[in-house]
Length: 497
Image 1: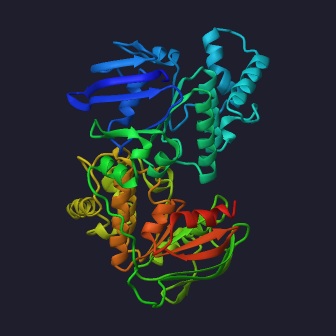
Image 2 (image 1 turned 90 degrees about the vertical axis):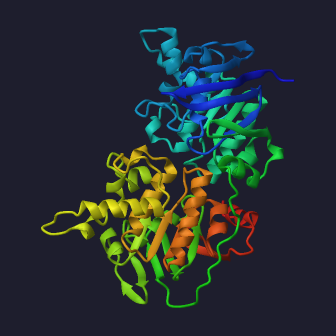
C-alpha cells in the first residue's frame, strides 16, 4: 500500500467564534488522484489553507508523510512536498517563463547575481519534467490561461512536489485544454505525484479522479472511491437536496420569431447565419474555440456589429450597430466574464441591480425615489434568490452564483424580450447552477426568447429545446434536445477538432 502524503483527522477551525470546519478527515496517498468537492462556502478553501500551512487548525491532527504537525506553517508544508496551484496561478506576469520557473531556486540559494544560463537550464529541466515545450523567454502575460497553468505545474514539480493541489483548475479552459490537463495529471500519477483536484464540476470529478470527498457546511458528508458515485449522488451530497433532471420542453407555437437573422455575417468571424428565436424558446449555440460562437453573441448585442446580413425583431428589420441599439430593441446580454464585463465590483449590490434602469426611479428634477429603489431591490433579491446580509455591501462580497444572479436580474429589469447569455454558469457551484437554470426556465415561461452560448454539454441538453452547432463561422447542425444524448453532441464537436 502506498504511503499517505496527507492524513487529516477530525480537523476543527473557527473564525471569530464561527465554526467553519467540524471534524473534517481527509487522506491522500502517493500517486492518488483525489477530488475535494462542495459548493462555494462549504469549507474547501479553508481546508486547503490548513494543508498548506497558511491557517493553523484549532483541533484534530495533521500528518504529512507520516510526520505529525501540532502546528503547521507554509515552509513545513512545502518541505513535505505540498504545492498549491490557485486559480490566479501566483505567477509574475511581467517576468519570463524562465524567470518564473527559476525564481524559487534564486531565492533559496541566496545568490546576489542572477545566472541567466542557470535560469534557462532550470526552465528547460522544469518543462521537461512534465513533458512540454515552451519558449522560456516569453513573458507569462503573453501566454494563454492553459500555458500559465502549465508553468505553475512545472514550477511545482521542479520544487519536488509530492502532492499538487489544484483549485478549480478548469474554470477558464477549453475542452481540448482540459483533456490535455487530465493527460498531464495521469502522467504525474505515473511518477508517484498525487493530485488533489478541487472542483464543483461533477463530470470532471467522475472522469479524472479515483477518490472523492464531498463537503457541505464545513463537514465531510460523503466520501469513497469514485466508482461508488454518479452525478445524482454527488449533487445530492453537495446540496443536501434532490435536484431534478427534467429537460426543458418548449410548448410554444411556430409564430413570428422575436429575433431572426438573415445571412448575418462579420468578416473573419462568421458568415451567412440564419437564426430564429421564438417567444418562450431557449436555444443553445455551441462550438469549439475559434468557431465564431462568441463573436456572434457580441454581434447580436452590438458590441462587435455584423457587417453583412439582416436582423429582425418581431418581424421588423432593425439596425444594431451598438449596445444602445440592442437595448432599445429589447435585447439583453449576460457576459461570460461577469467580473470584468458584467459587474461594478466596488459598488453596492443595489447599484449593480439597477445600473441600467435608475431613470425609471426618478421623481422630479432628476431626483431618485430611494424608497422605491429599496422596495424594488428587495423584490429582485427575493425573485432571483440573491443571498446577502446587506444590499449595501459591495457586489464583490457575493459568491459567484449570487453575482451571476445580480447580472441576470439587472438585465431583466430592462424589460428585455430577448436574453443572450454567454456561458451563464461558468465558475458557479452546482446548487447555484441549478437555481440559475430554474430561473431561466421561469423567464422563458414569461415569453422571453433566450439564447444560451455555452460549451457545457449537459447545460445545453437539459435547458434548450434546440441546439445549433457552429464551426468556422457557420451553422453546421441543428439538433432537437428532447432525445439527444451527451455523447452524441460531444461526438459532433469532436469531429471538428
